[in-house]
Length: 122
Image 1 (spheres, rainbow, N blue to C red):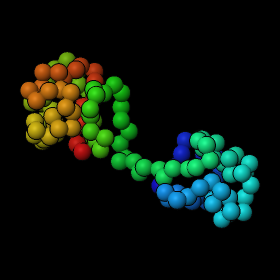
Image 2 (cartoon, rainbow, N blue to C red):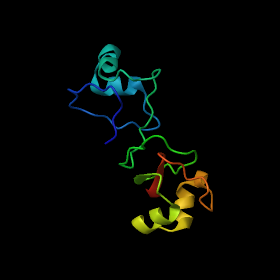
Image 3 (tube, rainbow, N blue to C red):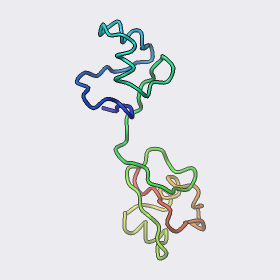
Image 4 (cartoon, rainbow, N blue to C red):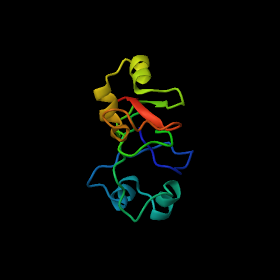
């Protein structure tokens, strides 16, 4: 379950936020004051929570080139000896997918930048 940054570590109850949820509706439901609600949820912005987006399980490393797919599940760091062919062979992926997930490398792989991370599974 995705949770917000800064949430109190002693939390033992969670509420799933929907598009119609407001801070007031959560406070009313659990019979808590705004001060208590805010103390447990310090990263609230304004007074209308937003549904959290579930994570794909992979943390995006840095640096990455622009346009990399948002659904990447696995990354590879480019080294001085790395080529698109070596990435394709190692991960058993096609150039079409490598380019689709990493459009900044170019369709002919002329812009594979050393020390940057590329997506190798989405």
